[in-house]
Length: 311
Picture (cartoon, rainbow, N blue to C red):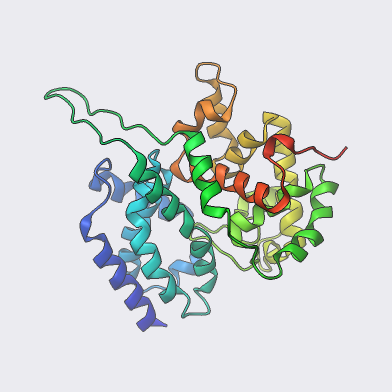
């Protein structure tokens, strides 16, 4: 195990020599990352790493988290090569494989970010003494089109349609459109073992606090690993968020970025739609919402606007 972790962390360190994105100050990023990891890094990840390896992992996760939490979608393209290199190493260890599932499910984020990067106009340098020119984000429509192209010919994984049908009644029982059961493809590739470095677990990637608020036990036995219980908690949360925002794009943004973040952005200038706030959301959320939309359209034939909540 230690040898494999040394290989992983050494590779991560090599990939980090280029440094973080030009828009992020390294000192600030490292400090913010240390604080974030202290609060969020799953103990199961940290306990498997010697101190030196954990420091290297923190550097990678700090950069990765800064990019995912930043506003600029195209910056995620910089992590593409690293993610593809790390994945097979994570898959060699049974204890790290749940994190490999999580990462593998998100590899197409980097692909779409790279595609969108090629369509963006070059950033004009700012005049001497002037503040930096703010870079534009790809428009929500451009991102929706990119995801439609990305997923157009992707077949559902073996066994996922039958699992989706088994879980569908759980969603309708929570007064949520059954089509949203396919959110699990975006979150975990329908693998209940998926685990994020921040501690989200299961088909619908529930964080511990969210799981507890929906009545699930996370220790000593983690009920988030139970597909039915995970689905019920996710559906209940989606129902609650839709009651608040009355729009599925905004609901999905809140599911990913947090309802406080979405509510705050809607309050700035009396905005009402997802497209009006999309560029201010984290890069991960900007990619997540149209990916869910394209996935549901591809699997069910329905757009988000066509979804009807069961009575």
